[in-house]
Length: 155
Image 1 (cartoon, one colour):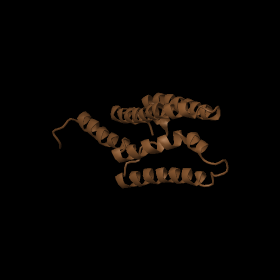
Image 2 (tube, one colour):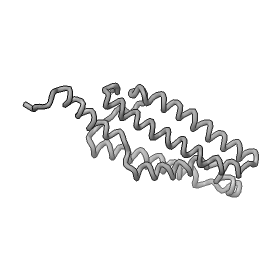
Image 3 (tube, one colour):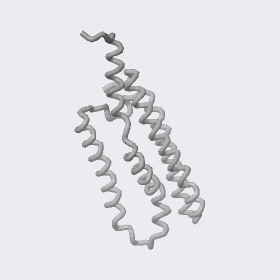
Image 4 (cartoon, one colour):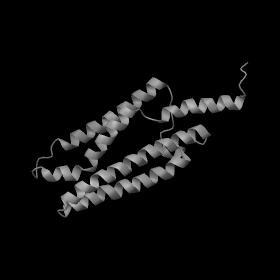
């Protein structure tokens, strides 16, 4: 029998499981680049000739498939299957909803600026929007980890 009290063993097990809620730095670096590219999509499209968008849907589909494959491979290698629904993490849910609102407003704002021929302002706004969305994603993951460690996550 271990000399460690049971509650300490449970807390340690939660910490070990919570470590799987975070992503490695390489993922975040690639995510940051992809975020800037996707957030500025309407800006980049405005530089292209009007009918030259044939590969864009394929590029976005490849990005989505790569993200899903990465998540599945990581889950399978670790053997830790965390709940996928954000509603399973009470603290993270509020941050996630705020992130959705910020993301939608930022992307729509950039799109409207490009539509009204304010491409330069949209380019200046692109970096702050991407940084805020990135920070919200990191905060959401941090809150998910805290919920797991506190035992608040539900399956």
